[in-house]
Length: 612
Image 1: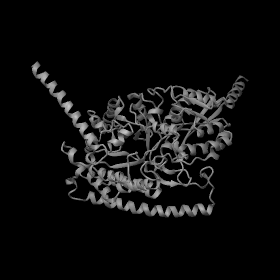
Image 2: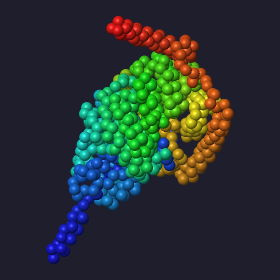
Image 3: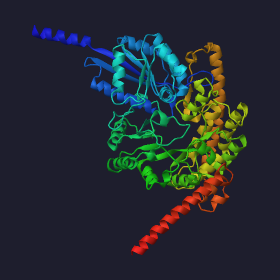
Image 4: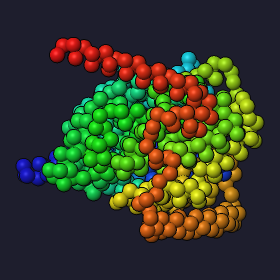
């Protein structure tokens, strides 16, 4: 009898267990025709999704909703996975109806898509929370809540501004469980530490949808610089916060067990992470002592080559690609954007140092500064091609992103900005340029891409790589061609690219008509045929360039102006210094600084000599 009673009690306990489904969705944004940009495989993994999945799994393991509640976490990256709202709703209701939809890492250009997703979940009766740079940036920099954020709050969406570590995620989960979500969770004045925080990670099924099986994580947040176009300093703060080497090792080991060996470290500037050497040393130890070798993509500034051993240890630790915030080659433009840390007189030294090390260099470059003209922009493209040993140039339109000083200034002045946030992707013009008409600026932006990514320059970059033993000249040709394909065939910024575009008829933007079956698939077939022709032509071109350079018996003898050693006399001769806006002043300033340093060294040597 006691046994029977015990079994009945166990059955009762089992029945009382409840499932809480936590759906983490990283939204994409719409293309110009109103369809979400989704790929079979995406190129860039979402760090926000990995960080929040790690926090969510930590909440599950700690049973923050009670010992009788099972938290089931499902991450969805819409850049590589279609968001099937109907199926998600069915799953949640089948599991008991308790859950929370979290729209995470929502940038300004993704806010319209996030709003449309939220609207459908709310209609189905599920609670929704939304966080990311747009909400955090607006609440940080504007004195009032913007209308689009107020609108989603009025719909019933809970807005989360800030970062979710140190128990903040616990709070929102508990409120969702109790049916008492607040309309706003604002932690912008209290940014958490990230040392010893739960490990950012994603389950194998989610990682498999990233091309190359990459993952991402951050080792630091915040930035001490003051660039007026940047949102990071106002969302993550001017005071830097860091993980520690033990955190890094835990992240690597956790992912390594899943077969993930390639990572994008999302720190805005790894060179200014004060623990960079400790991090690299730990990775080197894992590599040399245990054979745990990883491949890394990092972001750095233009002064990183001046840090002793930084490039050497970065390469040893596994860095094979670096994103560099070049931004512009005109000092006047850099000063206007408060990018004072960028010195064009150091660009060639820095790029040559990375080139010789064997790393691939990718640089961000901004078009649309007030002093720009069509002629100056196209001139600058030619200067860069000729004088800087750079591989990939990522062109962006100067955009007043919500959360930046630029946006705050224009907002206060009442200057027109495009009301469609979907266009705030750095690939669409959202303000009027003071010197160029809208048509001229748009044409110049397109022509700048075409000017840099010519077959001739792709071959030049391939030859620069091919001149170094052990380098494959086909690699830069391949990546430059992929950038060209994304721009020409897909009509999107290459950093939003992926492998095989997926498009779904019923997922069109709210307010735009759903096309008929016939019209949709006829247009899709026509687009696909046009794209395949472009893909085929450019892929064949890339193959021929790579093969040509690789089979050239004199490939190791190649040199050009960009590869020539930096000498003092070049400051008077190169177009980089002679023709750019503010170039001559930058040269004069450098010479003055060099002279001052030389005087200090001479005085120090004299004191040493006198002491002897």
